[in-house]
Each structure stands twice: as C-alpha cells, then as structure tokens.
Length: 303
Image (cartoon, rainbow, N blue to C red):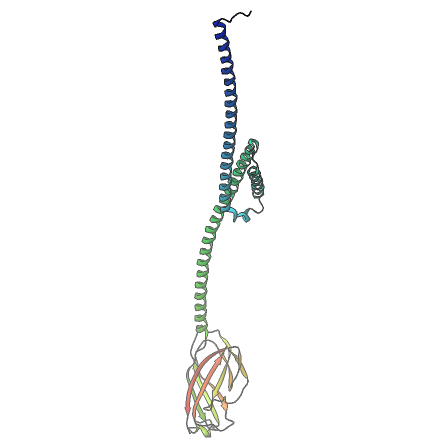
C-alpha cells in the first residue's frame, strides 16, 4: 500500500515543473532575441556599407565633374605622366563601383579598397589641377607679355612709318631742290636768214629759247635737254631719237647738251629745221632732262 505524498512534496514538484517551464521559455526568448540582434546587426552593417558606397559614389561623381572642367585642357599635359596615372586610377575606381553595385552582400574590404582608390584619385586630380592652373597662370603672363610686345611693335611700326614718310617727304624735297628750273620759255618761227617770220606757213625754222636759273642744289655737270614740239594737229614735229621718261621711251623733236655749273644760263636755244608746211594754231613746247619734265608751254603761231 502506497503512502500518500505530503503536501510539501507536491508543492515542490509543481514549483520544479513551473521552474523548468520558465527556464525553457527564457532560453527560447534569449535565443530568439540573439537571432533578432544578429539580424539587426547584419541589416545595420548592410545599411552602413550602402551608405558608405553611396558616399563614395557621390565623391566619385564630384571628382568626375571637377575633372570635366579641365578635360578640354588635357592636351597641355600630353607629355606628362600625371594624366595617364589619373586615367588609370579612374578606370579602376569605375570597375570597383560596378563590382559593388552588382554584389548582393557588400564587402567591407572592397569598400575600404574603393576608399583608398578614391583617395588616390583625389590626390592625382589635385596634382593635375595644380599643373593646369600653373600653366594657365604662365600662359596668362605670356599673353600679357605678348600683348605688351605687340603694343610696342605697333608703336615701333607707327614710328617707322612716320620716319619713312618723313624721309620720303625729305627725299621729295631734295629731289625737287635738285631739279633744274627754266624760265622765259619762248617759241618763234624764223626765216631762212634767221630773222623772225610772222607767217608760220613760211617758216624755215622753229626756235625755242629759255633761261636756266641758278640752283646750288642741282648736281653740276653735263646735261642733255630734250625738246618736244607738238603741232595743232597733235603730231610731234621732227624726230631726233628718243629719251626715257616714266619708264617709257619718248620720241623728241631735238636735243642739246649743256654744261651746268650751278650758275644761271641765259639764252639757251634749241632749233628745229622745218621740213613740212606748218599750219597756224596752238603749238605745245615740252622740255625734259634727267628723267623729268622741265616745262610745258603753249604758243599760238599765226598766218
């Protein structure tokens, strides 16, 4: 016959059962909470990595934007290794960015590598921009110097032109001063005996007379005076060779050599023997020497 359990033992057994239940529940809760904590930690880590990747993406985009401002000046560094280094680092960063975007689980090691690469890229860009800025300042200085040199050259050119014009004017004045002058030019018809013939149709000879004033600026020496007489019909009378005038060969009526010493020569005469019947009207007398025209005068000879 079994003995009846005492109330104390029964209470103890109930309490032990309850304790086991509480302990089991506690263990379950702890395990569940630990799992939730781990899951939250993983989510936080992924969020942190995503945030770091986003920050790196923004930094990379900012670097690209800053580089674009100087990209059109890259030809200035065509022989420099900094551009090649920057381009290589930029390509590596782009590869890492694509790799991280394609991974479901982000790698802290890759993020760290990307951070290092972008840091290197920043340094290269700063070096690159510093070189470009230095070149820009140097070029600005050269442009300013070139502008000043250009201005100096323009002033010098203007001065040279001014001196040239002054020399040309002086040369023209000297040329004019050296030229012979003639005064008292006359044209008369002569008879066979050398006396004046009033009826031009009966003239046997035409005489042109003039005076050469004193001119100390004219080079002394032998000079040839060329005479041209144009009749009323516009034809040149006679033909005694030709002379050079303004780049052309010009026929003349008569010529005469004189010795000029700078003093006045009065009564210089040139003659043309009439070999045709002359007509009344206006005759033109032209005198030349040393390649320039001394005088051009008009005379009326009557019948």
